[in-house]
Image 1 (cartoon, rainbow, N blue to C red):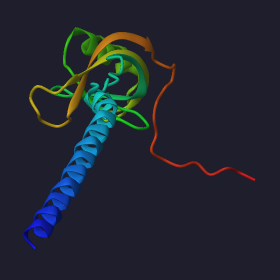
Image 2: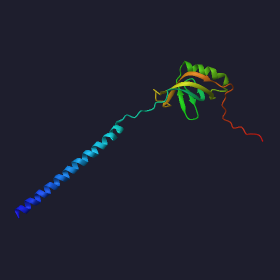
Image 3: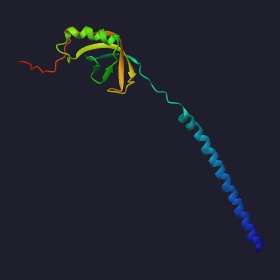
Length: 146
């Protein structure tokens, strides 16, 4: 009986060794396949940074302590410097009152707002490209005559 028990235990140990060997081999195979995935996952993502100097077309308003450029899909605060003063002087004859917004096209650098007041981003005007003649913006709707 003892011999049968020993043979049975030896058989179970051999089966466990085979099972353990298969487990080790399968772990090695799966870990080898993961290396390629890890390389792909560890690759740094390249973030596309838009060009900070852009051509912007919008409506410009200038007051004593603030300036704003509003486009179809953006609103930026404008840094008060010599270029914004020059633009203000150029649009002054086109304004009826202080709150008229005049369409302009400028080349500007987009910067984060250091003061964190008002807008998240401000622009620094680098070049004035266009101020349309008679470029007044009106908020009234004209009806077409039939």
